[in-house]
Picture 1 (cartoon, protein in one colour):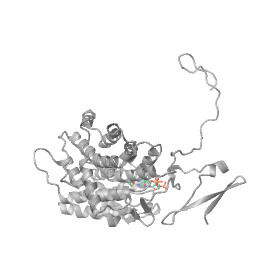
Picture 2 (picture 1 turned 120 degrees about the horizontal axis):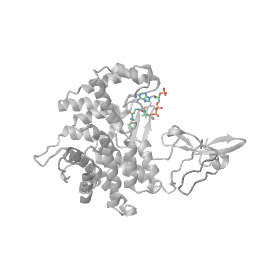
Picture 3 (picture 1 turned 90 degrees about the horizontal axis):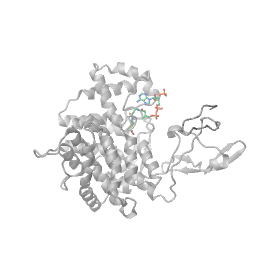
Picture 4 (picture 1 turned 30 degrees about the vertical axis):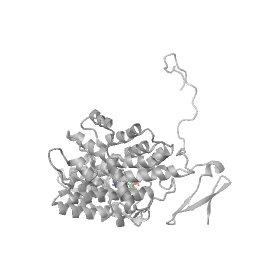
Length: 429
Ligand code: CMC
């Protein structure tokens, strides 16, 4: 079968089928409105594929996540820059490609000195996501050749390299410490940690345990196909908006508590339960009456255990043990998970821990403040956004994103009358 028939009001249209590598089937309904005069209605895109993509594959029923064909579990011992390269360019870098890529990422880490003044203008308690999204959009002002095809690869490196510098500087600004510049002898991860935690007063030694944990966290966050922020990057980029502008829009989408903001919300939720005496069963009852949501649980695509949550749960036990940290939130989180996995409310709705449930406990153990958690998610996700923006940019028949709607407002009203000052003149409205 290569087409699906849609019929309406005595007319019929043959819609071609699209079959993906893993046998998912989509019906191409592009001709439907012209031929039948109707549109599809799918708020939240529950049954709508907005594009084809070769970057990431998810099977939500079987808990499968693959980047460019590699199982996420098989990439956990890679280094984040290599995974970023894989997502963006479609293959794992050769030795020479990785050496060049790493060097470029460090040499392009400095932000324009004039941009440093921006940090002075933000209030001390500004959320780092507000700073990061504003600064990433501002990169277009500092690289005005953003539209040049031959500069796309350079702009990709600039974005990937400078986002971590902006992130670390927004933290330094919030605690009033001087900024630390990146250095070529350190890895991507070590540079970030130095910029976050080193001070001019003494040598800073990067903990290999923390470096590895951060590397893992960023890898598991690196892409997740057409999620809210990635779709945002694609929608904005479909108007041919530049890479920096498109990714800045993705950052704003990620910030919401139902998306990347959930990692901050999880820790705040666990801290609140703990502070109120640790009665998580009472909290779960409030979840079931829909008074509150259990943050870090549930997913639009995963209807089984999120493979990223599985990786991070194991890492959490290992890393906290290696760092000698005994965090009471670990036991609380595990108790909540256990309770949820045997409760019919969660079973019937197929609600499992997602990537955000355990990531915050890891960030806490690494000394990363709660309001930086979503920034950490963003640093991980930037290669994914770049890969999707680039894939779309290179697609010959890509068209501007412009959904239809079903209008449900008033029908034509009588023409209003305005006086010279612009006020409406009383009369029938
Ligand atoms: N706690 C309690 N009930 C929930 C939860 C939750 N976390 N998530 C979903 N439900 C219920 C929901 O009330 C609904 O119940 P009913 O059928 O009785 O109306 C049912 O499950 C389906 O939920 P939905 O909101 O229609 O599902 P969705 O696919 O639109 O939303 C979600 C997915 C992730 C936004 C949602 O599960 C949620 O709000 N989770 C908490 C926030 C969170 O952890 N977000 C991080 C997502 S993973 C990282 C990322 O990619 O951003």
